Length: 58
Image 1 (spheres, rainbow, N blue to C red):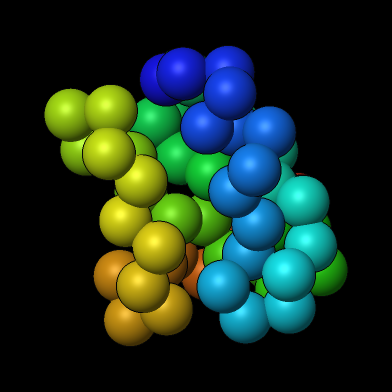
Image 2 (cartoon, one colour):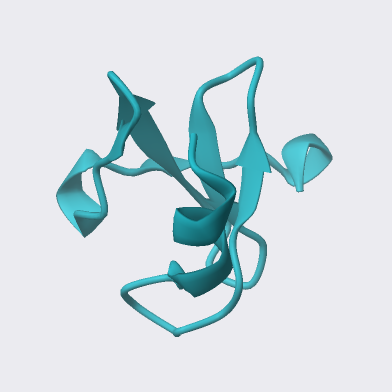
């Protein structure tokens, strides 16, 4: 994933910064406890496509 893109992407819900987890291919919003998938280097920033994080994953 392009580092410049990571610098400008924010959570579409709360506008917080996102953490890229390369192994999981996800962008994580800690305040919302959501993980947005990255497919073919394209972030899917839709709330209905996001995965809810468990307590230990944050």
